Amino acid sequence: MSASSIHQLIESCGFCRASEVEALQTMKTGMTNRSYAFFVKGNRYIIRIPGEGTDRLINRAQEYAVYRAIAPLKISETVHYFDPVTGIKIASYLTDAHVCDSGNWEKVAKCIAALRGFHSNRLHVAHSFDLWERLDFYESLWEGESSIYADYDKTKRAILSLKQFIDERPKDVCLCHIDAVPDNFLFVHDTNGAEQIKLIDWEYAGMQDPHLDIAMFIIYAMFDREEAEKLIDLYFIDGCDKLTRMKVHCYIAVSGLVWSNWCEFKRHCGVEFGAYTQRQYDYAREYSEIFFREYREVFGRDYV
Image (cartoon, rainbow, N blue to C red; front, top):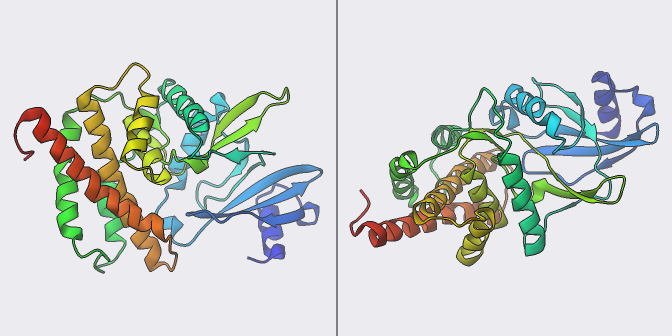
């Protein structure tokens, strides 16, 4: 979009006059949206404009409900305008913020503590994030085209078989971020200079098992097996029993295929994510096999 059209878009939101917008700057384009920073009367803001195909991926009314639910926690950015139809959002710009470096385990530990703290609030909204529905939905967006992976059908059968084990495990369902990935944890400082962690981008948030958020962090960080187990241990400060760990491994596998399918749809829209796409599919294959091995070790029989 041209600078003038963005100025006009900001004015159409009733936020300010187009002539008051200064120093418009294109921010890093995300996997779902385009964002632009700008100043109005000395204060800096950021406008989010949904990207290609996003209207088919995100329910903006549900996202709006999430922002209303989390507002009292002040865990995210301050939102000044949100259109629950288009998804256009204007929020205060978080100055001098930096995202979590997934290679810095001191920072990672702080993010996981913040995530665990958020889960402890046990917030509730009227919608859920259904892994299985999303898996099929993203595939349906291919509109009959085949997967780029030759063994997709085999992998999908393995993933679908995990549902029974997941369903049988105990869950303390609450509002979860779903996209709780390193890039969505921002380190900022308050007016007194104290470090705070903000969690942004709540587009996929909904009611779910909090342990799914652990898996999401792992697969976006593209952690290897050792790093994944280390992250699980960071979340479960009182220890993680074997069956719960196996459930998290299942979530890693299922989530990998969910986002692989998402990436395949975005590919049809002309948007490529390179190594990230392949790694998500690899998680589906790798961690379904890890679970099957673990199941044999624990129960002395094959998982069926």
